[in-house]
Amino acid sequence: MRPSRAAGLLLGVLADLAFGDPRRFHPVAGFGRLAAALETRSWADDRRRGALHTAALVGAVAGAGAIVERCARGPAGTVVVTAAATWTVLGGRSLVGEGAALGRELTAGDLAAARRRLPSLCGRDPSTLDAPGMARAGVESLAENTSDAVVAPLFWGAVAGVPGLLGYRAVNTLDAMIGHRSARHERFGWAAARLDDAANLVPARVAALLFAGLAPVVGGSPRAAVRVWRRDARAHPSPNAGPVEAAAAGALGLRLGGTTAYPYGVQERPLLGDGRPPAVPDLLRAARLSRAVGIAAALLTAAGAAARRTPGSRWTRQGSGAGPGAQGPPGVSSRPERASRSAARSPARSRPPRRCSSSRRTK
Image 1 (cartoon, helix red, strand yellow):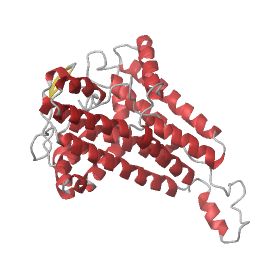
Image 2 (tube, one colour):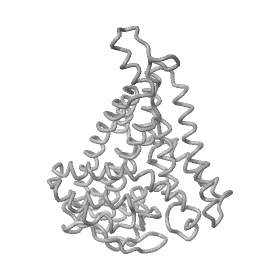
Image 3 (cartoon, helix red, strand yellow):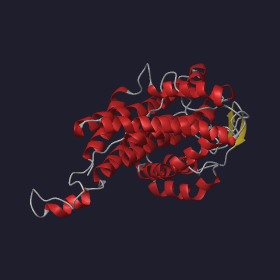
């Protein structure tokens, strides 16, 4: 059993809910600056060079997480390093706060302030968007980034501890930086985009299930959310954003998709859902649903982490029937190994751009 990892994940979630992103010296922002500096030396219009760039950065971050976790002393140390890593990589409070603030600015008619805020949510070109367009961008970003910035890091934290947390955040940050279809990153960012697709394959479906199951929080129907997910998700260009955005559209009773403008070009997205287009008040509904999904994901992944067995736990259970001193076979420890691995988080101030359907496969 791995209660230390579970406790660390929950404490990290509570720290995120209480404090949000660090205002200064955010580790993920530092990673983004390092990645950008390395790109100036390693860039070439070549997939192999991009793969080496991605592997070096992700491997270094995950390796550092493994060292930190191994150096943690006892269950208390595991809880502390896991909690710190979880807080570092999560972006739940900042995401919900930015979405709600965008809704308030649009409600007040302050389009200039809303356009300044939108890049903190997604990579779209705010100069081309009116209030409904920014509302739609915000709702779609809240859905996708709830998966990327909350559900997925918690999933990998439960599975692989500190290295999983930090490694996932490195992958997702690189995807946001180089994984889109710009002329510069079409080939160089290919590996980062594909690795991000693989890392989000399971967490995105978990997030979609949570969006559907929690639809009543915003007056929606779980059955409608699942129906839209099954019907529309495959039309989306991203294998992972599709299920999440479709389930969110069904849960909120909205229709997402349509013309989507990025600094590097305009795309026509498939329509997801049967309802009306998003309006400004829907930003607050989407933020409320995002928060509920994040809390549910924290409880689910902590429970999963606590229930996982370590390599020696089977023998420990078999021997326990013989009394307190029972031991497993020679060479097999009767004590579960320490477990935990931590992470990286989504930036707040001076952080790499959020995805908002800006990655290569998504966009």
